[in-house]
Image (cartoon, rainbow, N blue to C red):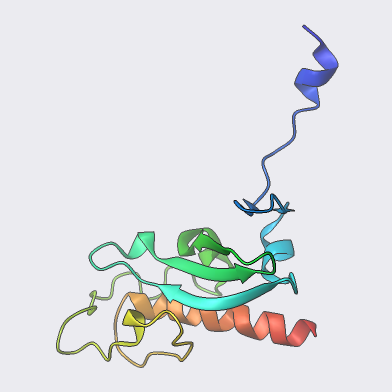
Length: 129
């Protein structure tokens, strides 16, 4: 066994495009990459920790990241975690039902945290330009 190859094994990248193989070593490289376009939040009813932030890569494929992987970017990642899930109820304004809806949500719902995260990502990308 070649000991140099064993020790040379590096950490996996933050994300890899399943279509073209492009790798982003760190979350910041991914979020700020101009070859990605933020499409929106794909919320999962009854399972907010499965929410995805969806991007489109220049190669034509979508690349999704679990919101939980990016929540540490929030000033207070736990803020809102104790709120109820309103998705699909009469109190829900329906924003999370539409991937392309990039607006904030004014409801006291656990998914509002991931909508804030998505908007923070948009702002980071705008300020980079």
